[in-house]
Length: 497
Ligand code: AHR
Image 1 (cartoon, rainbow, N blue to C red):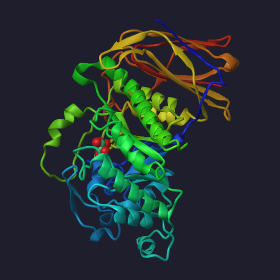
Image 2: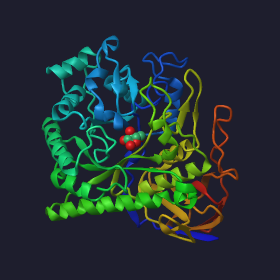
Image 3: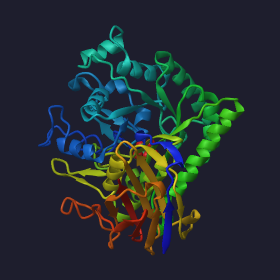
Image 4: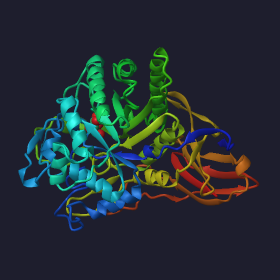
């Protein structure tokens, strides 16, 4: 079936926000313990962090990492996680009903970020705690010496401030599952006053107010309005979270999950702009899509009922080829919205619904979803262009008709490289793609990689860690026209220079 992309370098969305290639480390299951951190592991560095995992994180290429939760943060006492390890208390984390040993805390995480050249994005507890604790954590992280909290940090081994720029004002405070769940009015007041206190310390901090936990929350839309009505002058971003899975076997809608993300982003932008308009303000609130992924939540419902236990495997989804295509398409959607999405974090980084899996004491490997993230993060630099995309539609139960071809293009003027990211979301039909390169007609194809497989349920494992990897795709370029075949349910990264 024919499908077409037409390019014009003058049609620009804006500069690509590289912070959309963020990830997330939560104290949940084995994300931290036996994930990034395992002192007994053969590859552990002098700080107890796994070097094999660090290597894969570098290859994955995230830019910013959110920490320490998630639901975990809403009952977390950050003070438990600093100071001599032998004196740190063992606590119950009631969010995930787990024993938390506190062997990793703020200093260990921030120093790990420094070693890997990752920007940290910290969340404060606005569930069971409030303004004082948030402001004290901020001072512990960012204050210059001479005050008690900065001196405590120095005593704990880090005299220099960490200078964390991005702070989340709580997590999913609209969700009844959250410790300290709040009405929008309650949260708006607390976020407002916490933001005010944090900005008194440093008015250039970037603050993220909690938005909705997903687009079907009962308060979606009004939550954002009420929160921003109070906080618009104090915060820079509002969060959005979304997880996707095939519901009742509906794989057509699942492959079109980016449609939900598109509607989510557009609604939040409209709400934020409405609040600004009503206040005669020009402020453009940006979205921090700080949790997104494929998550088979139905499978997890059984685990949720478990009793309190030691840290153990939780929600370790194994991803297949189709999941990787959806992840590639969700990244395309985030890029398409670069004018209003400032930050995005795939949730999470290791073991917990993650691109990287580990065996305790053993190997670490790349899941299928690792690949579209790594390729997109590696090659998407520069300016996002707005291509004209046309082709057949697919009928979906959840979203009606959506285009089978989903695509975006990023122009890296410094490298003279144009990258086309495309997904064929049709499960049954191949697309015969034609790209009219317009002013880019003189460029040549450097590489076309794709993720496609006749066996859509194929996945990677320690026995077959490279069962699903990007493979060369089929395209040719003649007279300013690129032509190629995008197999049914596939994702593509085509580099032209
Ligand atoms: O990422 C897993 C969980 O999903 C997070 O802790 C929470 O914020 C969300 O509901």
